[in-house]
Image (cartoon, rainbow over the protein chains, first blue to last red):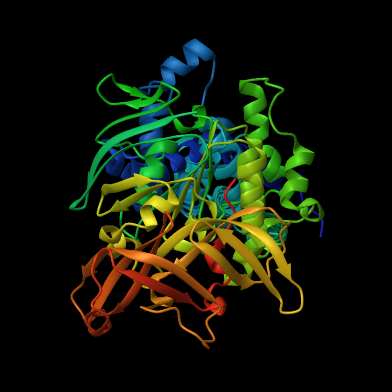
Length: 229
Length: 367
């Protein structure tokens, strides 16, 4: 099975967008998961709801909100473009942002559950051994929640790789710039004779998802063996 | 080293209000479950923020709610051995041992502290270094946990019922290590326990806690000899503790002869050098009284003394305190027996104790 240049571009762009979206959102995901799992503060329920919002509102609404916030004339978009030269609108970076936002609830949920399962008594023991709070987190909490972190990464990657609604709303469907695998499939279905191409991309998207799932399963098994001896 | 604790804390309808000071050596916080022992050590370690407290080591305040001082736990230099071990499951035994040492080294750079090899040999855990905590037995885990706490170069060691989760055989496995710790390292230890045998064997000072209050503070013989504390120390296990010296081994009979102020006592053979000093707890329920020296009895130990105090309880029993040449001995008999013998303070009596009643759980080693 050989791919046309157009198809190959869409596949590679999708992978790039998914990787950047997942890895870029990871630090934020870990931080927010930790806040939700271990801290009590006013507005915690609000933060929790905000994080979960992309999971429950229609993707097209998320995309439109992103457009309002990060578009060229958006609330943050103009500022970011002028100050840092970062432009999201109708660029692949915008696709990555849309995918990151859509995958974020899955990432945070998985990490948070995993962190909540870490016994606070172990953290207390580390404190009595002289570890300051930041190092308790890095040497106890984080390593022991790695399986959940990995699961979150896979879920968020899969979500990013398949994201359609928010992406097409926010950054449109420009071949070579913002046309990811799902939007490419959508385009091929719209044109006469595009069925074969759409089908081939469909097979690829299933294959990528399957490979990601198997890899994460293997990693998780090795990890829990290492963690629990 | 002195540890001063003055603390009040309310939680869930329970009020802990305790005040005591610890001298060097091993201080046992003794009391039943729910007496507030763990809350107290958690406050000393900094894992709990008390409502009102002043806790100080050598005059250095760890907590002083009035002055607004609360030192975070990682800066207190207090080792803590938990009941449930709490080894870090993702590290090897070696890494667990070095975890606290790493932070202690970064903080102080002192060279006088106990070394890694010394701790490993003291606790007999060298063969475990490469293993994971998940593969260790309960007793091995506790030994590693003790080593880990020691290597964090603490100024004070807290032990919260470190033997409670272990069976009798594992307890016997660890107790000698705790004795060595106490005698060799000169490290002050606060030891939480609700088991009389452990306290008898290990403690220099006992702080008796009940329902959140300190009821008494004193040495083991002083506290165990007091009839008024019987309900708190536990009726079944309660008894007087005497200090004795091992004078002779009776090889043919498998017995050891101990000498204390009250007289000579034969016990099941002890593997200790002649001349070593130890503690012996004689449970009140194992002591029988007679008015004349009994002849032709199977009881090997007959001690002469005079009745010094009688205390009647709720039931058919009466507790009798004897003065045997300066040593206090306790006996629990029925009120009927006491009436038949017409026991009263000042009356001379003979106390009989079966040798087989004095098992390993009754013997300890003072420093």
